[in-house]
Length: 239
Image 1 (cartoon, rainbow, N blue to C red):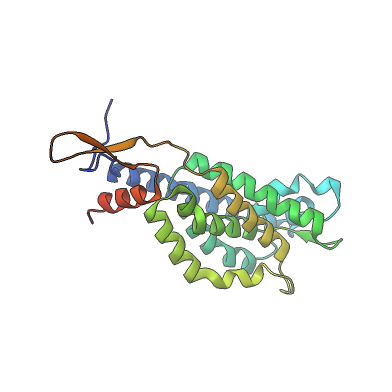
Image 2: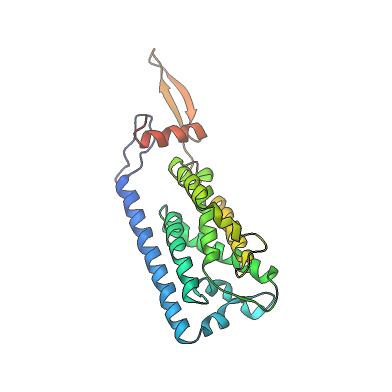
């Protein structure tokens, strides 16, 4: 069994090789997911967008409930899929690089919350498809994940993403023409809930420090937020 090295405070250091491996896995997962979405778009376009008409979500129509799981793969035009592809890859990668299994659970949760919000609240007679619900879910997850996990790096990423893409929230409020703001809002809520549901629950033991007379004295518990901050700074070589 290989043990992770520890820093001088006794906390486990971040293993760079493991982080790179997880990031590589997340990259290929998102690359494959995006490739699948584009292949579906080719088939959809060749069939005059029949897939979007048959497998989207329509408010109040029980027969379209399975579309909650298929609608994120479908789009209405090339412009539609092009506008979604970049944000989908970026936010999907950031959501997945801490663990692909957690990311898959998050994706299912966001698809369900976004689809159900559309199904219950969207006006009748409108078929809704598109990956933007997932995008908003991943965005919400990335922004707050570090706060729930008490992880410095993820907190900083969340702050940067929130500051850089805050304008996205303008299409998650009523009155935006041509888009399903309800699908966006439902996805965003799903991402925020997912950050709490899939938070890191690993317990951390209390640390001790040796005093000048050689006796051990209790120090800050490792599950204390300040201890987590010190750990992250130590892992980054800043302490």
